[in-house]
Length: 293
Image 1 (tube, rainbow, N blue to C red):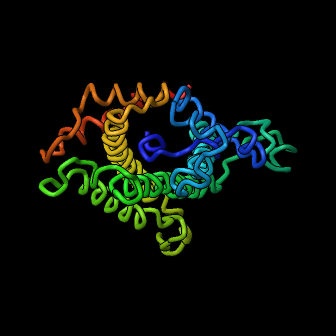
Image 2 (image 1 turned 180 degrees about the vertical axis):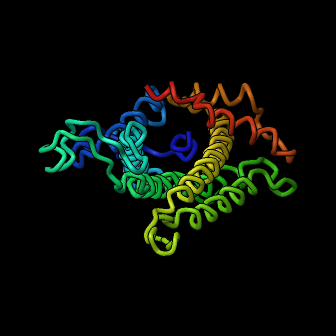
């Protein structure tokens, strides 16, 4: 929706281009963008040789940034799947016949082993990685919001409202997104690099994984709100483009329709909380995810 509202091009999303740097997430995200933008009159107009050469990074580099986050989250999932199916208690009791060490193998006896499977480092590192990856999705989303509300860069009405002299429009949506992204910069600091010894120095290095988990949860929620704010801004921009006769992509049109079932076009200032909540729920429950093909 932001691509179309900002009159962007999909030239940089082509499969041939993505295959020259074949990160799985990058390829997948570019394919989703092409699917969402299919049948767009604007996109087709860029394929006659007179397309825009370079959109801002927040548009042009969506496959690279969103794709890198996609790959990071795939790694996190692999780590968590291993962890959730592992034994992490201490000590562990091995039955007779278990090849724990040479002595146990020789005697056929069992063994109680005190080890370190409880240490949360694999999960802590993965969740710190997740924090950074999700925070980046919010960061680039806020930049697209900033593009949308800036009349000089978007060509749309200032702050996405017709009478910007009397109305602030969606100006504060960008303020809110900026505040959430700024908070994420603090939360994304890796918890796993910290360690305070406990238990009289016996437990002298710990992962701080629970802190990473709490911070990851907070970042996810913040970014869901940022994406919701972008959804509202992009839909407002699409409204103006539709007034000008633009035919948007099939996926974009359906996403716009679903949002407009919940939130009407903003003509003047009003309490933004109900529409932000409605958009947040669409994001939170992945209500638009089926449109990506």
